[in-house]
Image (cartoon, rainbow, N blue to C red):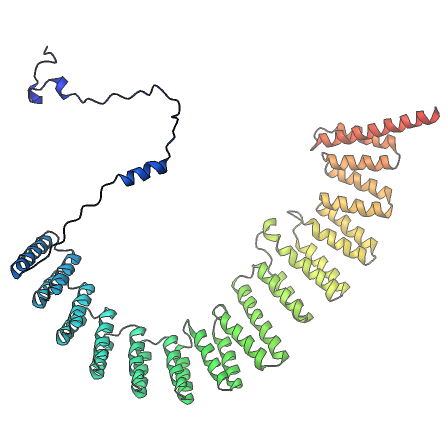
Length: 550
């Protein structure tokens, strides 16, 4: 076995010890007490900044004769050419090269560099812009015109090239040339801004008829609402009211079913309003409200209401406001008849208007939309339509018989064998009490206990009888309550407290005995607490009697 001292051929005949990585020994801190002078991080950074050496900059080179200048140019060109060979695709290198040649006033070489750069990437519009700007800056107009012409021919969809080209011709006073460039551009069907720039160009030279002809081509190329409105406003600005109205009428014929038709109708109506044609404006608003879907006519409704407030009478204003909201609600309930929140808002609107027949009609339409599934969660919002209907008939319409009929129809509609609503039973009973019909209230509550017994119904019925002082009826109701729910500790405790309040101690004791004898109780701690309190009360009374006898 070879020792570690023998050379290993795979390691170049070095020993294992020679190839081992020697790590520095960790420094052990013997004294860990804080130093007497503490140094902050700010002091450390400041000292590092002060000890930092100054930046070494290359010396400025001064060229004194043509030979040095030629050497300098040769060296720089070689650097640029080497750089281009390495990163031919980097456009910024080409731009720097061309700009350097320009700074040396060697424009032929600069043009050569620009042309070579365009061979690499002629689709880069930045190259064309900088190339043309160099020619313009040095007042080579024909060269710049040639560059612009080639640029817009190769890249006709780059709007900036067209704008710069036209701007140059206009600055030179070549209006006919700029117009010719605009016509070339319009042949490529640019966006709206391009057409508007052409129109503004003609208006700068007071060529109104030319601008009108361009507007006609513009609305044919871009048949949108915004284009037609601009055309009409242009005619209005030039005092051509008849022409402006004609433009609006043509737009309505073509774009009445467009998604942005609301904007067109509003602009048309405002135009007629400015012309003092209020009846025309009103007819436009009404025509628009009849043809535009309600979901897209919010701004139109708002404008119509403001128009009626300014020019209409009181009745017209109210009809406009209510009509707007009524159309909205009709649209909502037509889309989803089971949207009870929309029905509530619609009913509230009709109640505020004060038309009883119309309010009743909306109530009847609302309650006709019975939930399709017989599950309580689907009926929880629906049942409030009946409650509000009954309260409206009782309080606002003051029709007692109709209110009673509403409660009767509602109670007959609810499937009590599946689920029921204690609220509607109690409201019907309280209504009969308000009409001093105690027999009718007892009949309603009795039917409730028979068809759909609930805790709330028993508690309220017992409370009513207790207020009337009918103790025997209260006892019968408690018996019915406990017969229906024998595990209810609340019922047992309240029944016993009733007997104790009547000084029927034996009856109360018997009730407690029956309660604790039940096989199952929902809250036995409550029952025992009541028993404890009753016993404590009896002990206190016994002690009081003994003290009195002594």
